[in-house]
Length: 340
Length: 220
Image (cartoon, rainbow over all chains, first blue to last red; front, side):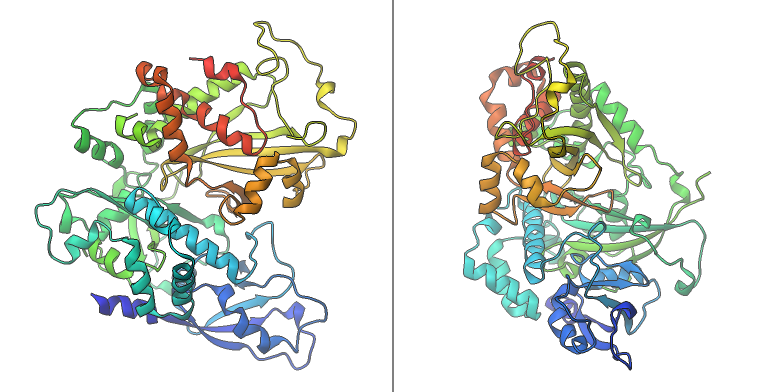
């Protein structure tokens, strides 16, 4: 099992970074910078490597915050680099051609970034959220000693898996998935939540080649869904990746029974809770699918650059393909019928 | 609302919908002279959220930048609403008038509502954070300086793909738990869900200087 984690941590995307033409002040145009970006890392962390490459070409005056775009789309800096690549490049482009800007930060679109500190805090806040999802509280993360926090972040910065495992194991963030992935824990009925971030884009026309997939030119075309997957103890190894993805897309794949939360409550309390009429109004309004579920097709699922078979046990995916902040990032392409 | 969740101060996504509709009714009745809260269905997703737009929050006069319902609520417990001349809300320096959009969005991770907001001046120009900071009550300013990255941060709105200010939710369930336990009446009459948002906002609103009129707590 550790092999897969090592594989993930060593994963990298070759980037070819061009300075935006409006910022080039020298002739000839500086050649692009070639950088190997860790999949589990973040673009702003690469700036110390990139800036020296272009510093001669930049106009005078102090630069603004650095930002990147891909084909004109400003890139969200708090999304791990590997996820951005999997999401925006249907047909993987190697090297991945990005444009770097040292001016004109689009602060109406992108959340501000103050360099490494911003990325670190975004990471820690996500880790806290994941801890809350898994354990019902974020005490472990909040109570981390200062040196531990620093070392944890450093291990992510440097891609040091050994150091990371040493510190993160203190946080006790194993999920329900673990016991099944190891082949043990038979007969244990346990319900748990798994932190998942889903990035969904839909197409209405089929395409055979990924090259023909429509370009994503706006973030409005992507649904970002930050919703934990609930694993019910009895399902164990039978709960597949497909089941997991469908369970957090009820608008495309309506649940036949009551929502996950209600059924887990029932398990615990042995009582039938009936939502009030008001609640039902929202429930039926919301859960009614816009599409007959037969016609919605999962065309593509990508995690850490891999397209796993949909029948793979979800517990394996969780155990091996999670990012260091304990989130599983899943890119999904859905084919939906044209909305009339 | 399941007893388990009540005990934890959290609520399910379904219950959030219930709480929201009760809250809308309550607010729109008690504070009818204010902009209404509305329920917005997000484009792609199952969920909806509460939205209040163009809410006036002044930063002059009182130190706490207080917002109050004119006529009803805190300053007057009379039955009949007093028609307050809107001019009294406008201060000598009209440039200091700040408008807020507030969104209450359910967070699946923490199972509590989260407050997102943005602010702008009377020309519709977005306010910089240091101007918003001036609006905030003193205790919020202190919290801001103590916990820069974990109290109010600028983050992406979950649905709108734009930066909004967000109030961090990780302590919410703790104090909601305390509030619910402290009030026996809530537990007994079982109206916990309907009152969840009023209770929650009466605490959270303080951060941005929004005071919930007492009358809303009595509405059932």
